[in-house]
Length: 241
Image (cartoon, rainbow, N blue to C red; front, side):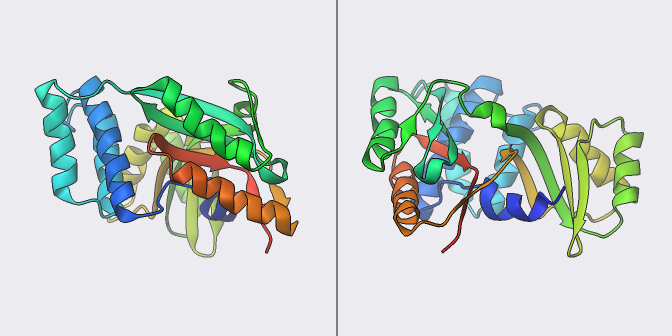
């Protein structure tokens, strides 16, 4: 389907403007996941996945440990997930995921980038139906048939397996993440996952070529990334400078 390259380049736009900000966002998310599902990564699989992801992004161990200890202690903030959708510069589709302890502040902060770039924040679900919620696992390889067979033998509901430039990309429903990763780990000794994500993948892309739209898109993304409550941003834009 030719998605793998575009997924790597465009669909996983994350809030990573500065290392301290990245650490803060991971700390918040780890705290919430540990508080809701328990502080033991052996029993809380979502926490285990998040810790592995944080380590890959070089989040210091003390940031991870502090968030888990805070959750285990039962004190701290009460965060809730919030999702906002809309149309950004160049009419691209955008999903903004947040964790907030003050919804009124968060919606105000998220709405501002839309307003300042002549974009339009929409109602819940207005663009999410144009994205697939996928687990994506990527690793070195060139035998898609062997990968597909391993997944099918483990009864994984795999959506697609692609091979491109010596890289295998496995797409599965987000609910199949753990089954897919376990099946691949057991089937291929020493497998190293270069891509290990649960993310939103756009069904279609839109190219942004107009200089004004490009400038607005960069401003739009920068403003969203500066919002403390924003955790992840997904879009279907391909910027053509």
